[in-house]
Structure formats: C-alpha cells, structure tokens
Image (tube, rainbow, N blue to C red):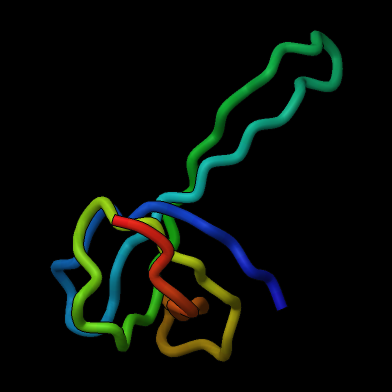
Length: 77
C-alpha cells in the first residue's frame, strides 16, 4: 500500500478532493534536479479539509474511474 503526502488544491467535488504531490529527482544523463507535480483524485470522508491543507493519503480500492486513493489523516493547515 502506497502512502503519500500532498497539498489539497481543490475541494469542489462531493467526497472527492484533488491533491498535488511534489516529487524531486535527478536527471539520469545531465544530473539536474527536476521538480515534478502529480495531481491525484482522492476520496475524502473528513469534512473539515480545506484548500491548502497538507494531507496523508493511501492507496485503496477504486472508488471510481479516477479515484484510487483515500485520505488517511490531515497533517497541517
């Protein structure tokens, strides 16, 4: 099971939020550090989560076509 941390960027859907996950990695050939952002649709049962909050998410059963993660905890505001 994959656990990730990210920042909430949208809460407009019912029981679903969009979380941005930031990754940094080094380019194989040139060695430059590259920052990449991935947006994930996450099932949310915690009502008090707002835009800008940091959340911990975990992989789960598919809730729909695009939702394959769920919120495990709210970390910070």
